[in-house]
Amino acid sequence: MSNFQIEAQNCANDINNALDEALSKEQFFEPYGAIPKHLLLAMRHGTLNGGKRLRPLLLRQTAAIFNVPHEQTIIAGMALEMVHCYSLIHDDLPAMDNDDLRRGQKTVHKEFDEATAILAGDNLLTLAFEILASPKDHKETELRLKLISELAKSAGACGMVGGQMLDLASENETLSLKEIDNIHAMKTGALIRASVRMGAIIGLASDRELIALTKYGELAGRAFQLADDILDETATDRQLGKTTGKDKKSGKATLVANIGVKESKVKLLEIIEQAKAALSLFGEKANSLRASVDYFGQRES
Ligand code: GRG
Image (cartoon, rainbow, N blue to C red; front, side, top):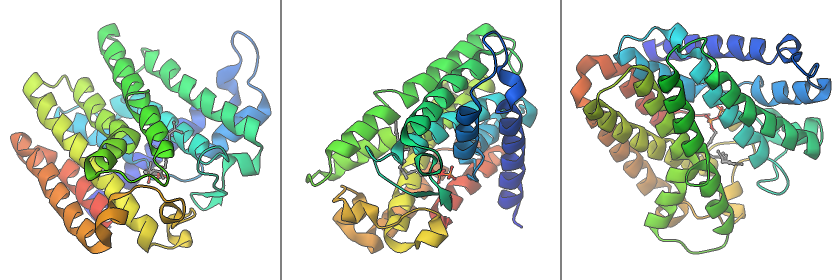
């Protein structure tokens, strides 16, 4: 295994263990009683069913530039994953992408039912902010508020939710490359940008450092989405653990639909190089972040 693979695996193990514990029955007794069992099972299904945990990895790698130990990035990493998993659960619903398969398993509304899937997503979103507010990893109130604000803005109407709205409205519409880019930046890029910025916030980055890392985060988000669109066109259902080719079928505006797979791959490599260049300020300390964006370009699932 490469250093990147080992690092990604360690991060995924840490986050999986922490999520498993956070989504256990005992956590939910006070003050109103236990969480309804069905709801908890649905939340666990949508969260602990695989997942590469790339957002916590970016957060952890960014914080490591500032010598923050991994243990102090677990809660923020879990909060990112909870928001990410909620978005996938809701995205799979019949009212949105209407998918039966996610991470190689039945989607939450297929395994349970639609109402349960909506509520499981809602509760993951709420829980993300509940755990971020806890002083366990970060004693300083101001730091916690900054993390909460960063995650809320990225997940909200000017970020992921707004991007999803624009994306749904764009089906069978002709969009300019700039408009497509903007939808991608909001829908997928915002949470990736926030992952990096939250790592920088935990690391008490200076303004100059935060600007450089934000640029990296934005470019990494673009690379991630473009790679996803290329995979949607070129990979198999089995490889991705979800239904592929849906963008084309639904007439969704993607860069790949506009410029083709070959040119998209060239563009992807350009964006990856720009992302790595944005890290020049940090020298070798940012090598892990460089490896992550390289992985975005090479991933097969
Ligand atoms: C429903 C509010 C709301 C938003 C949905 C993220 C999103 C917005 C929709 C998902 C559609 C999609 C497949 C977008 C492409 C990028 C993406 C988020 C891929 C999945 O992320 P990975 O590869 O997933 O990190 P894992 O399974 O590894 O966690």
